[in-house]
Length: 362
Ligand code: HEC
Ligand code: HEC
Ligand code: HEC
Ligand code: HEC
Ligand code: HEC
Ligand code: HEC
Image (cartoon, rainbow, N blue to C red; front, side, top):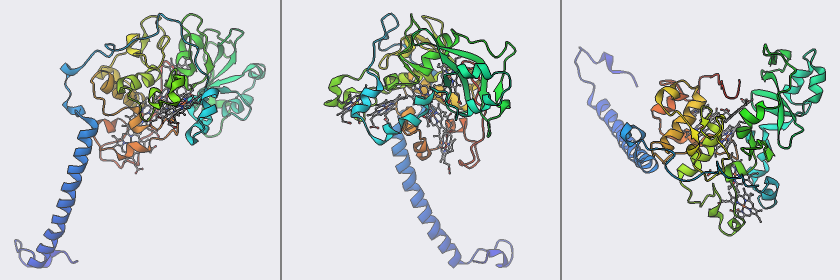
């Protein structure tokens, strides 16, 4: 359609025909928009009541107020994942061996990029032969070996940072040197979040990487008949606070255990309230200091654990077994989406971010 500029003098009105067609179309748009707004807001209100914006400081609650913990008890011996798999053979679980949780500690096989890089690094051939385990499943890794002590591992100070093709340059050597195996570092500073069932006294882990226990806890044998008893069951009645505490037990990389001073919670068993032992700074300043990945985690945990906004948890956006965040794309845009996205920029263009963590030493 030709635009209306040649209709005569300035101020001449467009032809009635154009006018009515336009308003007919825009009425349709208005109606469709109104329906969409009503539907979306009804959904959002039901989903997320009360809204995040409506919260004020006086509604903050003490995250340690509910529940119990195992800080002063012995850690239970848990049912090992192989036994769960005896009955559970769903698709998402058979893919579990590719999950980063399952791979966070794994055998240092020669085809691993971190091992290929080390093979090109002159002068460490003898140390390379001793390496038995790798820590870190995405871009960064550390080299480890099992220790003579039950359930413990030693770690080298050198670090692997992945690039496209692993080369000798992917390895960084700290000034303190490259070849001193550290027998205490992993147990004292890492194990609680990278292994399963770490005992406070012995610092031994019960299983390498993440067994089902770290999320599902001790699943009662009666759960086969009553699946709602299992944590994260589809029909379960566990509160968002209880479920969020489980993810928080590892995904807050800025906390300190009150009982031990270590950077991970002490004797945490899923179902416990992690905040009885784990001291966390939830202030805006603490969150602003974080990279987007860690920031969105702490914000969501604060919403649930401190602000009582239980409409949205990690599981709203993350499918853990399938390692997918597809579900998040259907949410309504709001201020906290801009932790990762940029205002006014297409959602498909997500800015690249550098993720660093003092606790994880990368
Ligand atoms: C015992 C500690 C622990 C617990 C409990 C835990 N995680 Fe993790 N999670 C990790 C670690 C460590 C990694 C990184 C593994 C790596 O790359 O080596 C990770 C990786 C992830 C990732 C990135 C990989 C992926 O799957 O896309 C997501 C997302 C995630 N965790 C979400 C969660 C959620 C949600 C929960 C609660 C249901 C949870 N985690 C419970 C320690 C834990
Ligand atoms: C409080 C729990 C916690 C502690 C303690 C901890 N980590 Fe982590 N670590 C995590 C989580 C959570 C991730 C996944 C973060 C993500 O992908 O956003 C992770 C990821 C990693 C990764 C993989 C990162 C990647 O992108 O591949 C490495 C390597 C790592 N940690 C090393 C360490 C080392 C070494 C220590 C001890 C010196 C340690 N971590 C202590 C929770 C912890
Ligand atoms: C890092 C945390 C985590 C670990 C470790 C984990 N799960 Fe899950 N699992 C979840 C979450 C979260 C859900 C619920 C998903 C939801 O609500 O969207 C779930 C759901 C399930 C379900 C019900 C749904 C389904 O997919 O069939 C079963 C069964 C299950 N897990 C078994 C296991 C077993 C067996 C293991 C060990 C091999 C394991 N899980 C390890 C977090 C975990
Ligand atoms: C003797 C067989 C058996 C064993 C062993 C077993 N489960 Fe189950 N589990 C079942 C059955 C049967 C159900 C109910 C049907 C279903 O949902 O799969 C169930 C349900 C679940 C659910 C809830 C699923 C849902 O959709 O609500 C979770 C989570 C779960 N089991 C986790 C585990 C974990 C973790 C272990 C190991 C510690 C384990 N199970 C060991 C048989 C078993
Ligand atoms: C509003 C949706 C949303 C919520 C709620 C949410 N996440 Fe995420 N998360 C995402 C998206 C989207 C990504 C980016 C995925 C990617 O990089 O492909 C992400 C990334 C991550 C990563 C880094 C993954 C990587 O590849 O390094 C971790 C770890 C993580 N989330 C854990 C959590 C935990 C734990 C919670 C709950 C405390 C949580 N998230 C709550 C949407 C969400
Ligand atoms: C933790 C970071 C993170 C947060 C928080 C986050 N996103 Fe995303 N989002 C991503 C990443 C990364 C992608 C790229 C695709 C992927 O990996 O999921 C993405 C993709 C999307 C897409 C698909 C774009 C396309 O066309 O491919 C939509 C839509 C979207 N996000 C909406 C949202 C909304 C709405 C929110 C707030 C409720 C949000 N995101 C919060 C990281 C995030």
